[in-house]
Length: 265
Image (cartoon, rainbow, N blue to C red; front, side, top):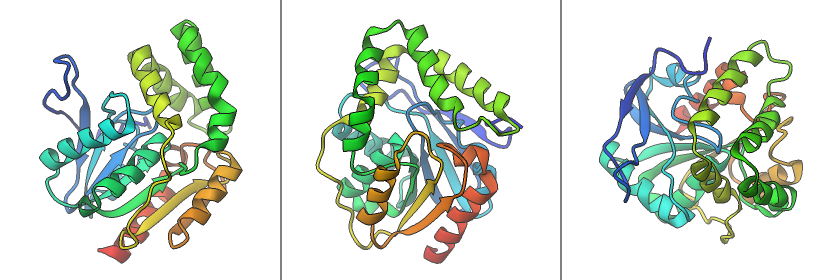
């Protein structure tokens, strides 16, 4: 089984952004209320294809690649334009890793768009992440891109070391990282560390936190802050799954989403 399931229908949007060469992609599957999925730094529109078919009976699932712009505010404004055009009505919004950061600020800026917020293996406070990764980001800008990709892949492998589909997952990320330009990858990485006030989400927006106890990317201190920051959130913690439980534990991941959303719908 590949991370990209044949059950997903690949579509390509209109060109978006200032550059005529900038085209981003999305997948859509299912019927029902819209559920929008935003990937992490090393992901693309195909990374959620293990969970999308498990959600299609009740939701129209949209899985997007990234919009490469500098500055979170610019990115979020661009997302608003795209989602208004493609989805056109309030939606459930899921983001993982840096995608989880993006969706929190999206919900802050455009609460009328968001029916619920699902934050997967992500964070609100960036202080510990910055402390741990500042040098990595700086050297990543200087090193040849082949070395940067190798370092990123080494960290990604930690989530899959004991999984039966280890080779499938590593092959997916190798292929995807080879397709990303160094510029675009650095832009994505910088979204993680841009200094902004903590996001403020309206209390009327239901929040689900999906977290792995063995996440090698998001420190325990950062995960604990997220849980305390969203005091009224529902929390589902995976005993294992690394940074990508939607790949390693897709049925449990989809069930947690469905249980949460069924209570809202």
